[in-house]
Amino acid sequence: EVQLVESGGALVQPGGSLRLSCAASGFTLSTYWMTWVRQTPGKGLEWVANTKQDGSATYYVDSVKGRFTISRDNAKNSLYLQMNSLRAEDTAVYYCVRGSNGNNVGYFDSWGQGTLVTVSS
Amino acid sequence: DIQMTQSPSTLSAFVGDRVTITCRASQSISRYLAWFQQRPGKAPKLLIYKTSTLESGVPSRFSGSGSGTEFTLTISSLQPDDFATYYCQQYYSYPLTFGGGTKVEI
Image 1: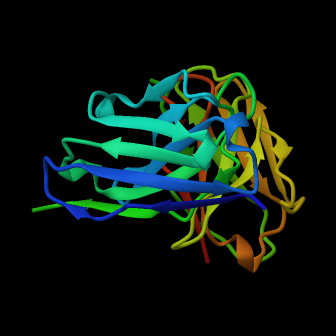
Image 2: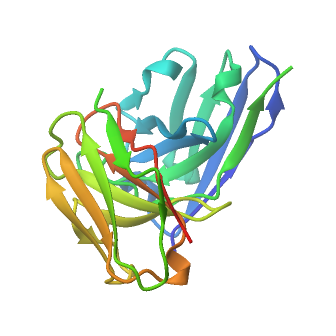
């Protein structure tokens, strides 16, 4: 059974940093694109970032470029999201999501339970 | 960016009703469209991908159709478990984008 378990969400002040982690099990992480998606009450679901199977390619939504970094450690079955220069508008539940095992990210077939990030003073 | 517009935003229905949700893309996305169901407090769940392919384990009362810029999700006979929020999402080009959601309520 595919399992994705996020951790690292917290209350952080504006301008602060946070690192989210996602522990993957039940499949071979190194063969799948992986993604972070966030959800806020006001803006619904928003794709944040993708990483290719070997980490050689990454993509970001414009609003987080230069502030967030997606990375992975396939040997540790883990996905990460380093978030710097956090803003109030980054407040959301962050989901770790599995993409395809092909050449493109494809559709999202498995989601973690989410971790809450709150940016507030 | 490709904008995804869902309608209606809220839908009131009864058990047994046939329900249709529409998703429009601001430009052609071929058939690279997925539908998700989200119940309160839970993560989204994949229902349909590539416009019309049912994810394993999803009941056959769910179906999807369309191509290009207009897509629909149909629930042939609404069940109590189906009262939830539904989202479409395009994976044709970056940035990947979601529709605003359709809440199906009693």
